[in-house]
Image (cartoon, rainbow, N blue to C red; front, side, top):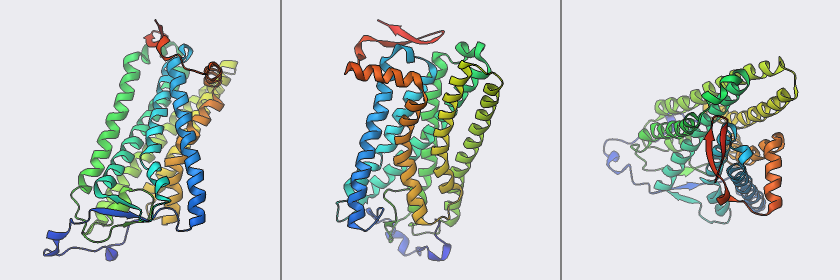
Length: 338
């Protein structure tokens, strides 16, 4: 995925003055076939609508159901919000580009896509860690759970997630913004991603590319190993306590871990193994920008009986009573206040 040094155009001192003239990039998209483009348009449009509706239903269900006013569902609703954002930073443009003769994106738009991609993925990584911490405390230290997972802690975890995501994306962009782009402007993907953009710069970016991509890969890999360890501990603890409550906890934790695998798998492959083919990168990019936000609500609703019952109840009422309940924390979690 990283262009070898001898394939990169390097500006001379004379050419360097004109090395920032690229005002837009050309996105090659997923395919040149008109039949496949029509097929992808229908499929991805359907997936995008389902993703937005599914995550929005989870968000509104948690907000409007007093029984779900607990830390775990508070974090789940924030995950749904991030998934809607992650699905929207590039998918709508990709869908529209299927019928565009010229699939171009401005330099500012390209940088914006990189910014939001790393903002949302960085935020989701920390939020998934927060959700595993919540399950660890709930199962391994149940007596201390109400005190540890208080309102301040839950809000703090969400704010920390966004703060880390912002710092991560700024650390990736701080070098990219000052790179000179003077010639090549074709990106073999359907959105701007950092590894593809920096190799178009008119200076030797091989070492910089290895550093930036490896740092993202290291963050993803370390976070995944941390999550894997925490869920192994939780599952071992659950296995030592056989009861109906343990069965429910096992179902919840397996749902969480499935989401972790779906999210981290493509990210680790792209950033830890950056020399993969463009075809593989396209497939993985589609997976974590389209399929993962789509599968998250399906996994949580199918594996979590409380969310499923609450959603069915709200859908049967044909409306959400948003104004009738306001979330408020107590020692047992969020409660209803009128």
